[in-house]
Length: 203
Image: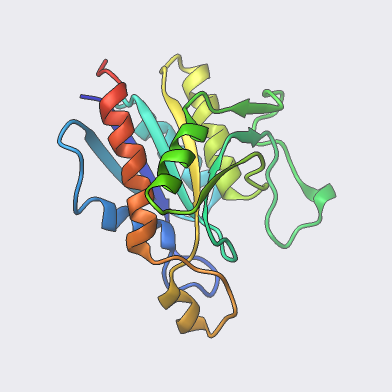
């Protein structure tokens, strides 16, 4: 059976919870039998995330699916491209730095993102393919997942899902933001895991 690394991020700033971890926990309640899932919670820190990711990818992973919350999103965004650029949220664009000095400008996911998005929508879960994951940790983990796989000949295919925050997160912070129930987002992720289980042979 395929071995999948599923990652999420810890809370950050004034967020007491992170929707990515909430979704990960929800989806593990009902997993496909034909899949071996490795779950990880990463800190919101460039260096520590990269270090832990590098270790996790070497454990015979077939596919890495990374999750991150996107406050303001009303749908799941399946990110197709990661760029060699890192920047903190409070930094100006000119303060950005290359994630890998001399590394490729970008990596593009080879996974069937458009098909996954179509399947999610057919199940009533709002989803689209996106071509820009930003320049913060969501982009960074997708870029490094591709790069570490290529540089170490690991053969791991990677994707990133930006997930909306949950209604309870919005209520807790008294914010006017779009949201999606965790159970609905988890249904979208389950579509991805079911498809992987059906189409990806084990190594």
